[in-house]
Length: 290
Ligand code: GLU
Image (cartoon, rainbow, N blue to C red; front, side):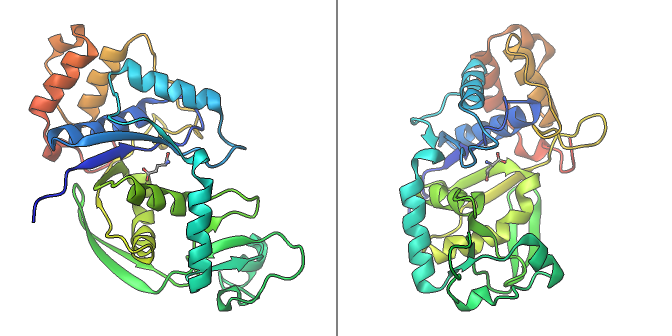
């Protein structure tokens, strides 16, 4: 059987401008796609209007362009995919693979994660109480292979770990939307930050429930700030200096264990990316936090 064409993606949530950590992730996924003669897509995961802004979306897209990271297809926005997510949720509910849950966080905590109202049995949610929809996991110890980190073992617990797929506020949740879109966009290889590593076994179950084979995964170590915290928008990581895209790319390549010649910094972003594609060594990416 012919190898499927590699399709990768970068899928930021627009909670703030692109920072150094997200540039490293974007660059790693771009490099992996290019070195596999594959396509590279960008998807904006704008599911939570309370935490995200179109301003941040514009900043991220502009910043990617400045760094020469141009996707091969039009950018996808999850905010335009609600109908698709709802159709999937309806199907899962009908099949009993998802269930309505009006439990509060406090109630779940008080019952060690069990649902006092036995939501998993498909009891209808009484009256007009707001409810979430959760995916019904089954108990599983999943052994899977990460393309960088090697063999992984993760345990998934039915009921206790069941992820919300539609939030009480009416917003579709990451766990479902990411899988739905990776399937719909034919993504063969997910390269992302290792802060999402723990999500993977649950996502594998969602892939199977949607009748699709899981992709390959490659998790790259997260970038830490000087205080040892993950560089993230929540920790107020500074936006990238848009006036220095070549320097940013060089620093990101170094963080990924690559060794671009110092003089390359005087080149434009396209030359730096060309060099990086020709010299990319996945095995040089450090395995621990950068
Ligand atoms: N949207 C997620 C984030 O910004 C990434 C999703 C993924 O790569 O699976 O953290």
